[in-house]
Image (cartoon, rainbow, N blue to C red; front, side, top):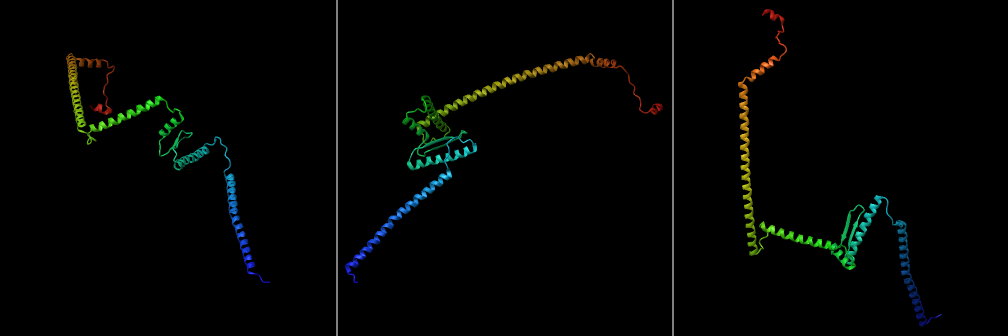
Length: 262
């Protein structure tokens, strides 16, 4: 049986169409296969996570050591999240945490300060974080700080430091201030010397009076002693002492033969 050319071409076309159809079916089945695999892997991971972690009841942890460990982990986690949201979203974050022991942990975005965030919160929310007294106190502290800084600068100038940039008028004023201070110091020094001289004179007079009193007492004691010696006080005292002795003693030799020889 002979097949004509048109029939051969038709058969070739049918084979080609069937091949394209099978290829299309294969290509369509491949994404579904991967999506089902991916979905199944996600489900498996979800089941594993449920089995591993479990659901934690939110309540106070009674064990102190477990509570401290949990606090440390959760604190590090929230600190990490605050840093991430600062970097990723260009947000201004300020975080303050106080532990049960009173220890403070804080984080503030590098692009801002805590006081700026508090001021912005006060303006945005309309809540006053501090009253007028505290504001006045803050202004007073700032004023005192400025005065202290200016006094430190003046003190350095008086010591001769940082005076290269001073103009002529300020240098003259500084010289006058130093001369006035030197005059006051010298006057005070003279007052101290005069006071020391007066105290020295008072001490010398007191010393003379004490020496006079000591000499008078010494003369009086010598006169009394001479008077008592002149009237035989010592002899009478010895006689009275001998008359009060109840017995008379005689020295006996230790060896009786010596008495016989004598």
